[in-house]
Image (cartoon, one colour):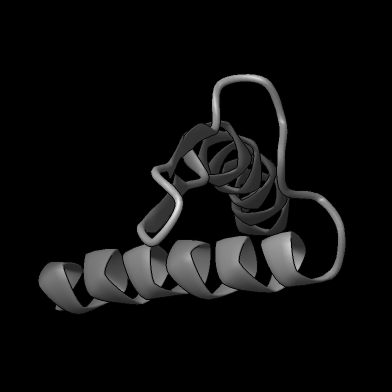
Amino acid sequence: MRAGIIVFYVLLVILLTMASVQYGLGRLPGDIVVDLGDFYFYLPFTTALIVATLLSVVFWIFRR
């Protein structure tokens, strides 16, 4: 059961990170961007950390 909760949390972080990047939270300092002309790679590292921190706080509040 514990593994299911961890998988749910990780998937929720990924989903919310993708949604936040798509709707304007992306491009923060610390996000990794590689643009080589025909190749573009974007890794929203800082955005994912912010989303994970906010989710942890929300889950902590509801657990109490």
